[in-house]
Length: 285
Image 1 (spheres, rainbow, N blue to C red):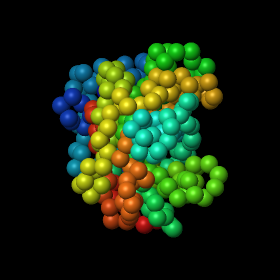
Image 2: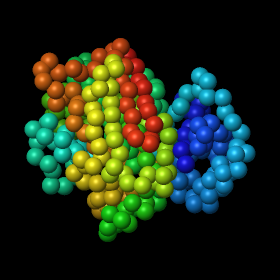
Image 3: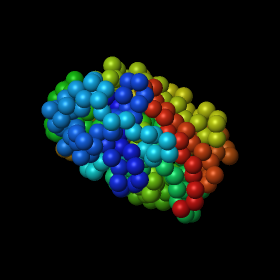
Image 4: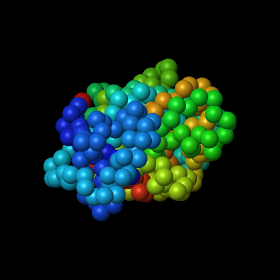
């Protein structure tokens, strides 16, 4: 299933994109798409059954904002340097263990919402990423196979980053990762049963129409199952938590000088195979 949330920010309603591309209203079946729903197999089964009958009310998508596909996210956990090609362009050795940092849930916005360039920023960068959404509480998992069974689904994430704040201002990466609007998510949450292999998905990103990133999740150093297993040894993952699993090569930081960092007026578009497409216009904060 393709689950999404539509409407003005803070007042989104749950919806479903059916196999024919029609937007369907789920508000008569469920209150929202959040961790409680993703952990409720009976509720998900009711949605699947209703989708199969074609009886769900259709929504007019004209001018309708798409919000983040998951409400009330508990935490956003991110994996750095998780692609072989990205590590090479950064001049870094592949990490022996996953590099972990956090983004605050309030960085999450809709897939087509405005992204704000922080005040004083000179190095705002792009990163297309596969997002994993947790569906069952995960703690101390033993195997990657067990970990994948705890995944509710997948989505497109844009891990916007300010590289000066991240690298040159002391401390951890958090300064460059937690600026407002720095995590567009969506358009949909695609349930795990529709993704045959999360390690066989193409990722692409364009800036002002120019292709910048063209990669595949096959390049991940730590595959999705291993990432979830590993994280469960250090923190409890709850339904509705989001994991951004890293970006392939092609970011501005890895380009020759002068590096083409983002500015107000730029347009970024990104997509992952089977998971939909995002488009953001950048403005000054």
